[in-house]
Length: 430
Ligand code: UGA
Image (tube, rainbow, N blue to C red):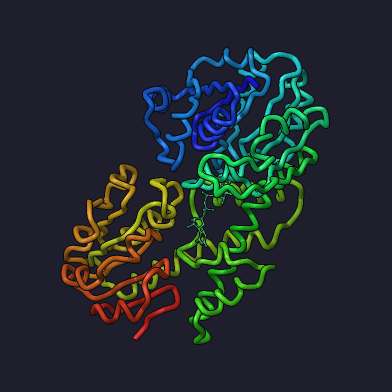
């Protein structure tokens, strides 16, 4: 099939590269000249594992000219829908993409909406500017750092729109749906279920999944906090919960709260959808509030233990391990809060070399450089290298003996043996 993808961010570029690998003829349109040049020159601005290897098998044609839409059987919309000023998604990039489709798309072409958009958007486009095309909501469930894997081996494909578009969508993903032995797979064939529904349902299914995962994490963080108050061991409680298949072991790691370019934006958007419909989504509201408090609580604990002007060695800046992405990163938000409260922050992150938007955070090149002379060390991102660090070496370069573990990466006994006073999410350990 001939496919044109609009947007070469991590959803668009990953979708484009994976579809080319599956045998489709794919053009990807990107209007940002710097990003476009990056893709054209063969480099990978996303550092997504596996992307370069797939491109070596069969590449995508990256262009800036939207007229490639004219020859497409399927047009994929994968532009950003960032958070607007009052929590609602900003749809200006989507409006631009729709105008391009209107200008070039042939009658009957399928428009796949991969961007996360408010419920009702596809219906509105179908009955309005894209009435000559068939608009299908096809949300993505790609995790940053695992996007290629998640695109080739999804748990499910969710799509919704007119029934006549279904066979085209199934043909587009046929090799994935059939569980073919694709790049990076373990050879275990598994047919991927396709959930075909109305466009509105598919749009809500995306928000529901992210909203539920975020709520699960907020609940987990509440349990970790409560464990401290009642003298229980959070890790034992959570591990036992996870062995119940109805709960499951994933997304049970407590931390500084959830961040990234998706959960914060999508939970706020879901709340704004509910508000707009006059529905009080009380659990979601609480999950968002809990997430704000989680970070503030940890920041207060640090502030109470460290006098003003103290130096913090911060380990981690990315919003999670495995990505250089610092958008809505709890680690960066924590650094900002600490600086606002009069502390000084030197940070190290294996994937983040500079942080221009936070000039007061000094970014160092190694763990030891970031911790040199620090009064306290803070673990803010769950990078495996922080779990493995030789703590006595770190203690050797710090001035103070405080270790705040915002990701519960270090066993308290190990920290204490290295000469630190350890505080996890659940308070101080002796
Ligand atoms: C998330 C979803 O997991 C994807 O399915 C979805 O497609 C994507 O958003 C999106 O909407 O595009 P991602 O933002 O890459 O993917 O991040 P996650 O790996 O889900 O992590 C989100 C946040 O939860 C991070 O801050 C992470 O540190 C935190 N987290 C995750 C925890 O604190 N504990 C956990 O056990 C798991």
